[in-house]
Length: 199
Image 1 (cartoon, rainbow, N blue to C red):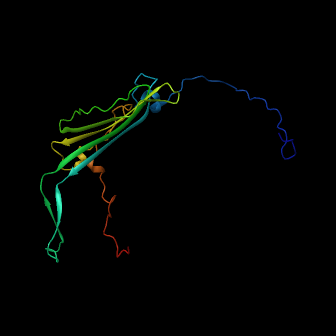
Image 2 (cartoon, one colour):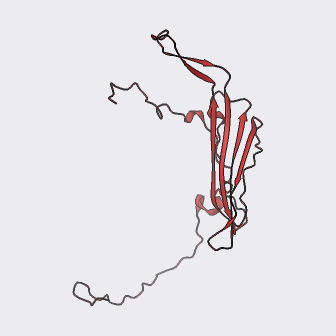
Image 3 (cartoon, rainbow, N blue to C red):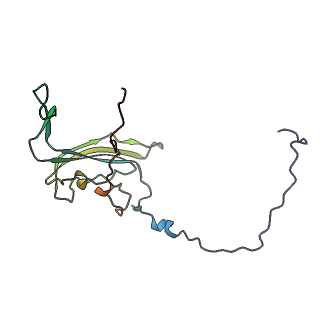
């Protein structure tokens, strides 16, 4: 401990301030109170989800194929031809990984409510049961892939797309895609580029 100097003087004893008045009242959290949270209470305080990941992937196949024009000069100003050999098909691939301490995870039920989707494949994969940091609490981990085919795909694929939901979140948010949210220019150029570009 350093000695007190002119640059580092000893701080004199400070007395605590006194309150002129004290008001006791309940605290209102308004819209941010815990009763307004969107979480689902499982009623089990001894289980913790250490990983909960669900990704939905969609594969829309328009069955359109590209073929080169055999003429070296092309045909009608184009060098490729496109043919459609079948109507559009749509696959939904749901890929999930879940891990939970003390209890087995709640896994997605492959039997979906929408009759437009037909379950084609189930690929569950389990990891060996291990224990948490305390050496006693079991840790369960499971992953899987569900593949569905669509009976009648929408003209716009995004009408069949859904955001997944974690098990502890109430199903109160919009989880479908609104085609009005689609914006031109996010993956391409909005207007014709000024060139030439040097590569």
